[in-house]
Amino acid sequence: HYLYKPGDKVTIELETLSANEEAYPADGTVIVTRDTWKEVWLDPKGVRVEGRDLDIVRAKSGIFPPTQEPGQHPWMLIERGYEHEEITKETLKTGPDGKATFNFAAAREGYYRVHWVSIPTAKPVRPRDVVETETTVWVCTSSTARIGYFHDGVELIVDTEAIRAGRTVPVMIVTPSAGRFVLFSVEGEDIYSRRLVEMTGNVKLVELPIGPEHIPNIFITATSVMDLGLH
Image (tube, rainbow, N blue to C red):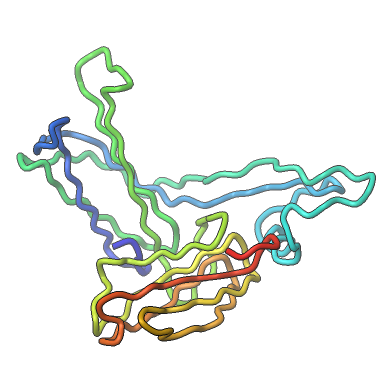
């Protein structure tokens, strides 16, 4: 699963393999961080714009960064990237079958990154000897508007393995900023449903009931107009 609710136990299944893709027991360190996107711009007047103020500018502008007035400096990007808050760090060993299970509690809404690193004890350690991999999970509720995750466009995050007839599947819509309207559609042999979703933040969790009419396949799409284009 990729989508969880605050307070859920997140379970990560790990498997270590040799170069021949055979089970290989290994020692490693698992680091869980809660990542928050930070983006800071300098506007033509020299004022720092970030956070919700930046969301307002993005929502009002047909294209971002907007065009400056004659004689003014253009918008300047100061910094952008994720800030990392360490949640837990543990050593872990996979079994003879190369498998292990790691659990942690996602206490708060957020974007969580789970990173595995295995460094051999033999010295010297060459860069190619270090084995790293990672996965991510999103923690939110139907009322969540922001979790610190950023995607430069429209994105749908869904647990495809959880889609079964008779179930309600969570689908998270992501836009670059708040103030957008997204057309959320479920289609197959017919158009089963369409709704216009107002993004009060940059993420929105939608609960999608799966019925027998959706068998065997459905297509879930999200469309929005931004930066003078269709996304």
